[in-house]
Length: 297
Image (cartoon, rainbow, N blue to C red):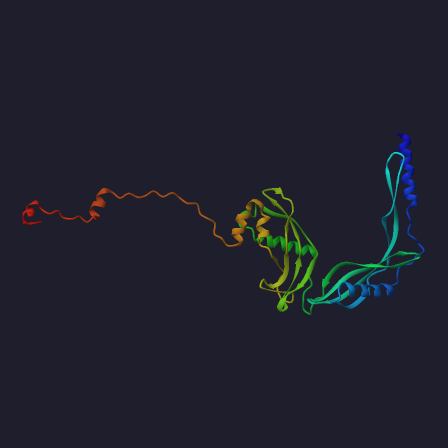
């Protein structure tokens, strides 16, 4: 058993020693190479989008990726060993502004270079987050904490007052917000997913996802970012609000849709009129005297 452990340890060490180490002598691609590579890559990946501007967004960064060499070995105990190596890479970060059909948008990208022979050569472009370019007069989105409070307040405003002691928002998690221009000058920020963590009847519930939440100014039917007044929240899928309310789903749904709560029905007893009253109200047919029978009646 000890021998097997010793052999395994040796093989492990050999595997580590055989890993190729990043070369410290190589220099990452220059900004000139990175800019040219990004422009060429973007024109091929998105031929309908024109790059309006591009600028370096920080110094190059060197790193490595552990990848298999596809070389395997089986030891005397039947264990299979696979050899890996560290492949050196480097990235040059950039900010690019592109013209899309819906407007201008800024992307965070990186030109990725990998070692080929004795130098770094271009490999691909890695794209990160993006944001729309605001039009003159449009307001930038508030910070994340303010948005979470707006979502909390908007959710609780859709809960019936008599249930607000039973349903509470513990916390809110949001995805990155994106500016979405609409038709006729309308625009809003959209969060593709919002995770609501609720406390219902004192119990912590698992997260409930609201599929699409909009942040806007103005009116619901005319969302604008250049309007005066406070920020507002719209749950695009209204059913998400009631669905997250768990056992109180129907009550919340009725409140949102302005459905009046049903009143309990009472069994009514059929009233019976006194005999004297009924007789007095009836129309009596006069009886024909027997003495008239002889006259043909």
